[in-house]
Amino acid sequence: IDNEKRAQEVIAYRKHLLSKEGQDELIQARIMAEKEQKNQLLAAAREGFEEVQQYIEEHKQSKHFIEEHDTEKTINVIIKADVPGSIEGLESAIAEIPAENYGFKVCVMYAKIGLISEADVDAAKSSGAYLLSFNQKVPHPVQVYARQECLEIQRSDIIYSVVDELVALVEERLPKTEKHVTVGRAAVQTSFVLFKHKKKKRKTVAGCVVENGTVSRSAKVLGRLIRDGETLFVGPIDSLQHHKDSVNEVKKGQECGIRIADWDEYKPEDVIEIFETHFVKTEINWKYTKNATENVQEKE
Image (tube, rainbow, N blue to C red; front, side, top):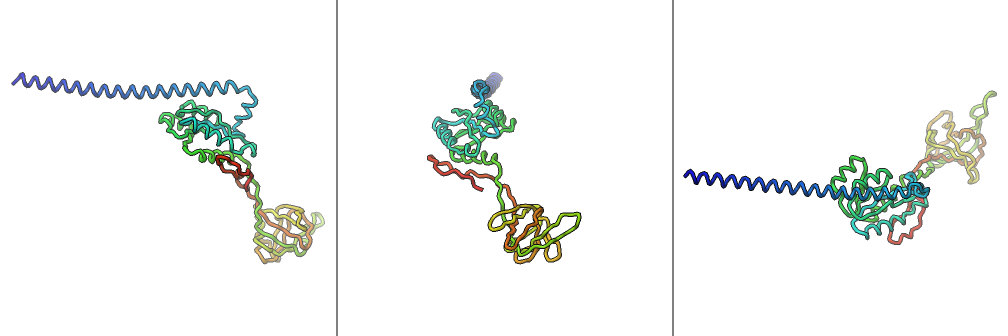
């Protein structure tokens, strides 16, 4: 009985050892796999970094390089894609963006096949580039590194979506378009002196009827004096009266006295337009097609 009991203990112990060895082997295999993945990523990072550094070193003395990659006038792009066809399609589409019509450029700094590496993140951050991973995943360690560097990696598998995003980036840098919005229109009927003093300049007011909209004395509006279809003067509204009262607003159909600052020559049949100035985003009225032939024009 003792021998049998001893044999069972030995068998149990051997099973325990085998189980532990199996676990150790599994853990070791996982460690080796993770190490290999890190080595591959590091090798890719070094390769990408060396290529970028070589490119910059070869061109940094060139005036053309400095002008071409000026981040104020250029949208730099770095592409890492799955296959050569993706790179060809992206480069062809990006080349069609009519940024140069607006004094800007969209420049592909480099485009390569392969996963995005930490070196690509460094290159994008130093150049202010749009970093694109096309039709493939971004390795988790690289995602973590990009977040640490406060850089966003763009991911897409649709070429026209990438083009739309780049066009939007150009539009964000374009100067705003000034747009005048007419809010009121008054017809001049007569004129009269509002204030007269020997030591002060004479001021004349136009007696008007508001034909459309609203005439106001807001700091946001200006008055435009029009005679025979020609604009003679533009300035802020210095005074606005309804009967004998000074008011801030007069509506359609009401009579009023209007004076545009620094203007005193009003005649019957003159028109005073009240307008606001808005600064709106300048849009590039263009859409990507395989044979983009649309006219490029500015849209208010």
